[in-house]
Image (cartoon, rainbow, N blue to C red; front, side, top):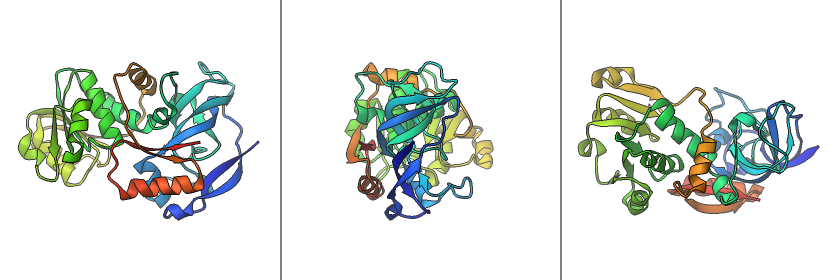
Length: 311
């Protein structure tokens, strides 16, 4: 069986995308074959296309990229449990997998979740790569608990806006950094205070925090040590731990890596119950032109939430 796929033949800018018919690999025992209904654009997808990670993992060209996926199950591996043909699922496709920018995609069972009937396809298309890192950073590494105080950098981004809601949902006090343009919307999501990074220095405004989630890096990461209480926790999605600063401020600095249980089903339920929302800023068709335009838009604009691709 073949599928029409949007591929790249090498690393570079968005002009690299083109159509090609690709043979669909035989499913491994714990894989699902998905008829794709939608995907999204993430910073990770753009970085993979540009070759940022080529020294860490090399793509087999021509490569199908695209990490977020939603669609119907059309075939299942021999060891699949809990999923059936016809189920609507969403999930996160592995870096070197049979990516989502295609008519069909291959999704590992461990990275999948069933989608509730009341969740729109455009929301499900963007949930995995926002909710999985946010949940892992807050709870699996950050060990956030009710009543604690957390600062989430980059609150207007997909991961940041999801993290604000997840933290607020368990009863934490949430602070975030973002443009004042998005302050009202982020407060509605659960942020107690939005610090405008254009005009304010968060390290002069906050102190005695239990946890910081860093999605920005550089000076934002280094200055985050100053706002934590002794034995506080700093989890970064972009910076390796700075052991010198961690020792100086007596905090636990961590980098989001490693394997955790997939929290996607938990977040799907929160969305279905109306406790978590996902803002879709722009929608494009899942075509060569659509993927190019969507990734260009993401790179050229300050996106609040997600940019989605739909069939």
